[in-house]
Length: 192
Image (cartoon, rainbow, N blue to C red; front, top):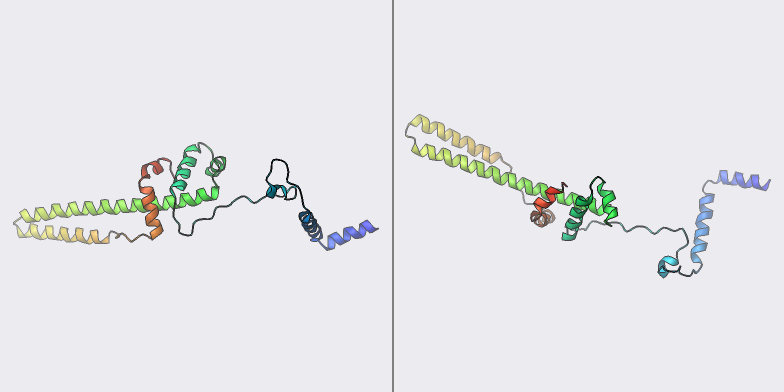
């Protein structure tokens, strides 16, 4: 009958087995243990079966990429070949969380560099078009043609004004852009 009462106590107190297990671990932790052969004393002192937490990546507060992170990202992407980035990262000893953070910063910097290039190319196209129309206006003597060319110049000026002006990038993004700019082609080749 005692076993039936114990069963009832377990049913009534569902957390009792967890409490017993926790107490057993605490008692076991208080016992001094000898380090296991070949293991450092700090690992050997842990009770058998205790898993140490894996080191986790913490993004830097400043949001800046390092050259080492960019290099590890490229190494993982080149080695992936049919595996996920997380699998490849683990195989190469890179934390998948760090790889994901690095990828996000690299993509952010590459997009900002692309936007800058598009704005610069757009500004160049408008400048050339305006120069051609202004040169044509200078050579025309007919007032109707001059008026038509001036309208074209005004329309091009209005369109050029609508092109989004470059905003100042936040400091971390600007520094990450400089860091990846020199490796732009290499990063594009590994398809972030």
